[in-house]
Image (cartoon, rainbow, N blue to C red; front, side, top):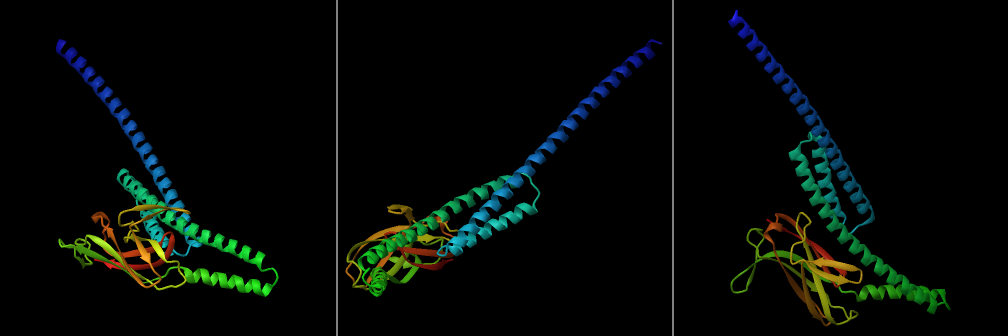
Length: 294
């Protein structure tokens, strides 16, 4: 009788323990399910935010492409990379690892967008300044030549032609990778793993109408990912700052002048593919070219 009573007591205790354990397990399961549901909702919302940011970037690039001509291909290439990333975001289910990676890529894309748009804005400011200068010249000519509409038209056309004729021009623009020997000799090489510098060479053509004297020459070199390669020299112009890969002062005497500028390299930005060159005299873009590195 005593043994049976003990057994009943033990059974009751065991049943109580199991009931508590089941209750705790149920509470934990519900909590875990709610947390998983909440986390999934957060990740899904984050994915939607990323998609909105990418669509906004694409929209800004489309607007910039419609408004600009000089940098069109660079803008199109950058927009295409954003569209490929957007497709990847839409095709994959949201998880913490992918969200973190997409966030890093968006940060890089925004930095690239800011850099490209600064270049485009600088070119637009240059064009605007030239347009304003031309408008001012036209007003002066109109005031001075009211006596004859025919003379006004002739003077305006002549002024425009003289301005264009007096501008420096370059030919034979080319870029190449070079190795710097211990002797200081430069040897051309197109392999990214071996080159020490990037050399940009061109010829300033003879021009009797151009003003002789010291000229500030600058070059920008962009790698296949549209990253500036070189010393990142910041120059303040009237229209705002510009960043260049290399700079040099030359003395121009209205005769043909061969010029080469050397840009130091950073191995992290030396990529295989097509590089773009932009040559300036002060803030005036004189010419563009491209070359390839393996």
